Amino acid sequence: MCRQSATVCLVKSVPPKAVSGLNLADRLVRLPDPRHRRGRRHSFVSVLLIAASAVVAGARSYAAIGQWARNAPQDALARLGARLLTSLNVRLAPSAATIRRIIAAVCPGGLADLTGCDPAGAESVAADGKSARGSRRNATSAAHLLAAMTGDGRTVTQLRVPDKTNEITCFGALLAPFDLSGVVVTADALHTQRDHATFLVETRKAHYAFTVKRNQPTLYERLRALPWQQATAKFYDRTQGHGRKETRVVQALTVDDLDFPHAAQVAKITRHRTNIRTRKQTRESVYVITDLTSKEASPERIARLIRSHWVIENRLHYVRDTTFAEDASKIHTGHGPENMATLRSLAINTLRQAGHSNIAAGLRDMSYEPFTRPLDALGITP
Image: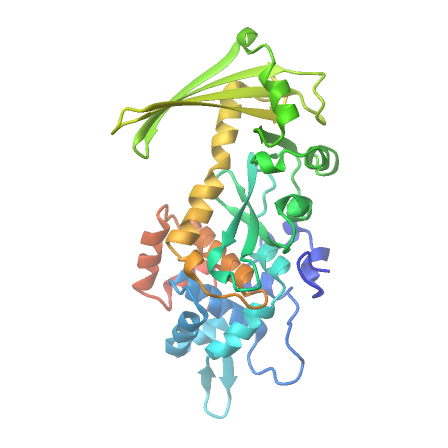
């Protein structure tokens, strides 16, 4: 069964490594068609390929996807496997209504897993959530989406957090399908949970680096009371950006009696910030707990891992909101919010793989030849 719906999802029986070398069309074939067997006029996979291509070309809504499909030339529709009217030898594009119905009904867990990347071999994977604010309705809360991304900026998967619960309950389900052996999973203070640490180390054979803040006062105070003045392992890092100068001091201590599963090391990160315009100075200290030993992770590596966690904010959530206007999208029915977010993540992965570091610029580049470049980037062969 799918992790997010009652739809039978064939991806659950297929290891991610088994599809990592397949093209997009061959991956999507493994998804079940949610439509009734009667009345199917358009190929399920072709509709998904059309939607993916349109989003890579810059489409932000069902109407925009439908407009892209309606204006697509015959050679592009042929590459996408669109319906062939044999009597006239003409390819017919699906309507915007057909596209909307399929995207709103397709299995969200399977679509996210099949269009994401395999995290095996990555140094780190960050897990973090984001709400699609425009999907909120009077009696329905906004869709909250928990995503995973590798430290080098490749989206792995995502799932929608059920209403009346939070990200904590979905953490294990998000990462369960993937081989995380040796991968360091980073998360913010919300996910600094004993069950999460046990799940990662004992079940997934992974590592963790969790931030500890005052939401766990007992653990926070224990870390704060450690003899930091005796820490000899230190790392200094200085950066400038976003209108401020920042100096980070990372100290690390080995621990063996901390009441947290598999904890081997604790780090204290002290941030000294100076506002360039006002010259106002601030200081903040946060703590990081990890199962990595001092031989496996120096203070410098811990600093790199924690900074890599913000990749998911800067290169996924921020891009989806500013470039694709995700928070302004009014899509709210069925699985529409999460599946459209998955198509946006696929577009971001595709553009980065094509060499575009700036996604907005990449979309403009695709728009110059909207019916060929997106298909080439997605690997849709003639």
